[in-house]
Image (cartoon, rainbow, N blue to C red; front, top):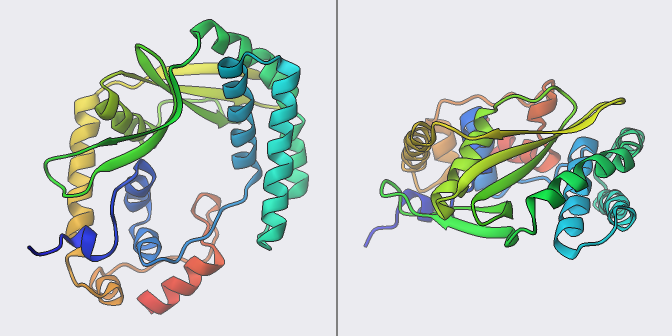
Length: 261
């Protein structure tokens, strides 16, 4: 039996983040598949991790907001130390500014989550098989309840529906058959609130995912050699790092230079 293009290049599953990366930056996805990856250390991501830790432990373990805050602050310390040990760039001043919002945010949001009840699972690995591809869709949902799955996002901009997140929650819905909900923890210098959206148009998002992963598979089928795949793809990656949302790490830049140029 011939290997599928995914198996040929060592792709054993597809996560929502891989699918979304292919949509926004297919060249970077190819570089990652080739094994060139970097851990991103950004204050906004650290804040999101810390808020998630504080909320999850409060609703699962029933600890106080003060205890949750201690755990959330510990997450800032852990990630800063991890970034230093890996010699990665990390904006400590920016992280400190974000960390200042933690207490107020947890005091507002934790009581809301406690009203939802105790989740039946957190950080649960889920997978779903599509007929059109030989590898499963796989992800880790934040919070699962009897009637829904909820995914925590943090943002400093007024939240609205987001296609990337909708596709992510669609995968969770396909795996659990439960209503998917995106929870935005909206934080500014003056505001901390929870704004939630039900993910609608599941069939539309599913078809979009199927169409996308078919294209991913076709691109990998161009060759069993990743450099040849990259050359035949006709993609030209922008390595300038002018776009904050599309930062290439040192390893990724090294890989792109070897594979595309």
